[in-house]
Image (cartoon, rainbow over all chains, first blue to last red):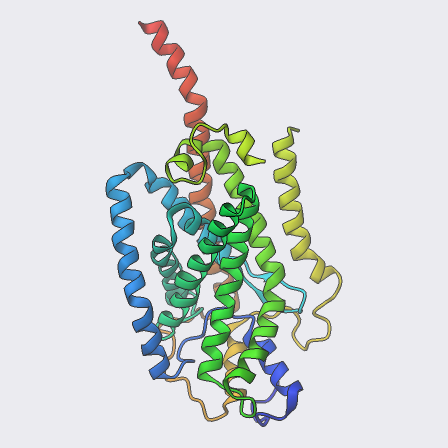
Length: 254
Length: 109
């Protein structure tokens, strides 16, 4: 452990050390956002979660048969955010798993499923926290799913095959989550010399490098699950608009 | 092995390789604590950026040891994996059962 007495702003190496140690924990730890920031992110996230609860209940009421697949999407997020994987920077981090559900059920639903996962980790694992829940929900359950969904839709529209688009969606959902986390940390803890942009540049660089291989892993795992889904649940994927109805799942799976 | 199973296996293999390579190549050797990923470190880090910063809230419950914490993480992964396994098992069972149900229905009629 490096003693805490080190001065701040003493050149790049100190800050890099500091950042390398911030970045492994994707979720901002309990009590580590100033109260004003914590409240602001909570206020920003709340409407998305409320809207998400509405779309989730509507989905379950109108299509009770999708409950199982909703559960599976939540379960995927549960598994992936529990997997702490080593990365090329010599740190560990974990994927988010929000891309799959966002592609299947659209992002609002993931605001709810992601929040449930974050609550579980905050309450039982002391990973993340209640005061930082708003900020963590905003990065992992709001921005991640929306950015991933946008990447997926754009890839589909530009004619990419389904699985390439799924990979892009999951990759972007994972990486954008960490980008938002670094923005949140940079806003709360600006660099003494470089200010917000200085802190953001440094946070962002290291976050991105650590997270890129994990985002690739998440993309591949999401493609794997989507391939299994096209084989097992073609009808449901067609109803959700992921598969084109009538096309054989085999052709699309490729 | 079918082409499908081979592609799935290959996907898993790449994921495993991405996780194992940093360990095998010793990419964490330059650090004091290689492959640490704890929130505790992030906490120290912010305290270093802003030495005056005092966390103003502490977790309601904290796992008493690293072992308990990894047990709870394993529980989280197991819950998720269990539900996923249930989903795919159910689907497979239904798909396999469907033709058989048709047959027995036809026999009964």
